Length: 195
Length: 278
Image 1 (tube, chains in turn red, blue):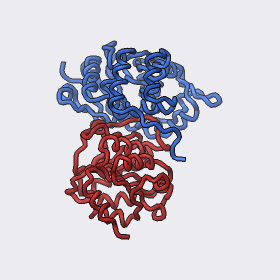
Image 2 (cartoon, helix red, strand yellow):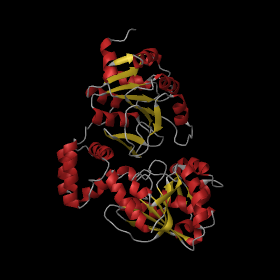
Image 3 (cartoon, chains in turn blue, cyan):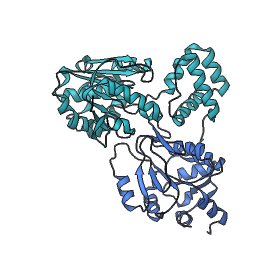
Image 4 (cartoon, one colour):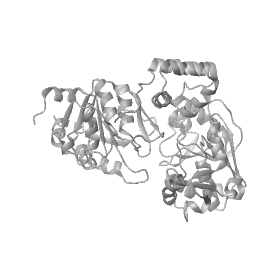
């Protein structure tokens, strides 16, 4: 499937790339990080569900394979372009203002902390329509509402094609509530982000 | 179904209005709070209680009992025993050997919520053989959670969830070694409760109340904007004895240059600092 020229231009013009994923999304995100160019002048935020005491070195693994500067979010971290931020385990990551993140330890959303909804909704609040957001494979409904809010604010919203996802429920929930401008396969997503 | 109750929550203008109102009527100042999470909490109350913005205002003005309830919901009370177990490991390895040289060890757990951190520290001190010469003060602004803290009784379901943290903290045995279990509740051992005291303290408006060898304040600063964080850092600095320890946890670092000079970093991963200077 060919990407629409309008979708490509909306991606190019966006200032923020939001990536949310759960079960079945790790490999996709790992590969995505590798293809993002070092000079990508955007803010990239990744929210991936993970276990709280799973002391995996996701950041280290991602950082070693990323051409962009990558770090795990700490409270009151500055938000700067050209950086990939990863939401830490056991906290929600909130976009506080255009310049700053803040963290939150309140209740899990959809049994998830970090919750994709929480970050997407606060990003919609602050960045309005200036984002491209992609919701990948996952086994619950986290992220769909946040994606809808981003779409309502005018951001470009993409759900991984549920038929193409290892776990279809998460992107499927987004499609069901009409939160996605585009429903794309992983290959299309790769093509778009390199366009 | 995706959505149970939908409320957009207050706009930023309405947020400022609510903050002003609460300050005027109840004398409680939320103006230095991180806006995104405060807004999330207020939206949550509106959803839980099915209140629109004007209903909420009305309740805050006219219903005196409602404010206590509002305060309890707004302030986040999610906590765990041995939360971030590597923090406890760092305290055990890098702080306790130093503290053990003091005659008495006074510890302040600020923003202690339902007491899980206080009892985690009590267990840590117990295992290090320091329980008899130490005392832990737990403070919070929320009177309801302090009642729970004083009881030291947790549901078995919660204790099971904390067991994994305990295991990663590097302490011997299991978490249940420190509790008496009856049916579905677990009560912390009496000897661990003995050297603890819980009381109300507001970090924003209250002052120094004792001198401490260690202060632990984790997952509290995240709710405050930077100027308020600095104000409370100053309170902590003044509450510490010379060479006392300040423990903020893995996601909350001292950022201000003025305070970086007044503390020495003991662990940059867990954000543990030692007071230096006068």
